[in-house]
Length: 154
Image (tube, rainbow, N blue to C red; front, side, top):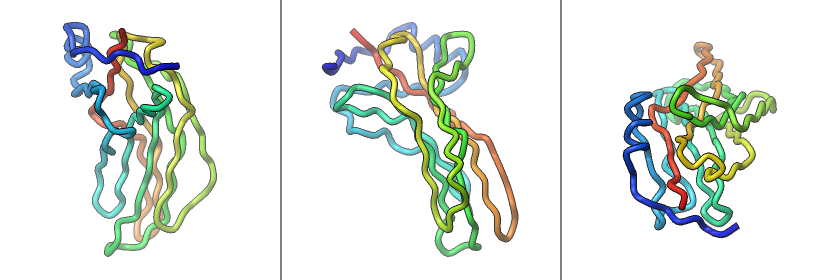
């Protein structure tokens, strides 16, 4: 599959962004293979991203959790990673990965299989995952960045 033409953010993209209150990142033709991680948390950093594989022109959801160095020592895991698309009315899961490989001492990552974003050319995509940690305290959170990724297809 060849690289599809990437166009400008149009009215449809602006309406989608307004509909769910998130910023929309449209992938430019000169973008690197991966979009920057969107993260939050201090002692345990939780991150998610819609990864664009430029070579294959596909999207995947990726997630990672990291026990931040210099803080309390936590074991971490990430599970239930989902690549979702926003169709103008709501989020629909298009790929998911359970990733039940257990607890890790400093970092865990997981990701879904790939999709062709041009199969749904007017949709935006988002990543969501469940993050867990245990140590000085225990926690679990299902989190998605307030960012969506779009791929203008031509």
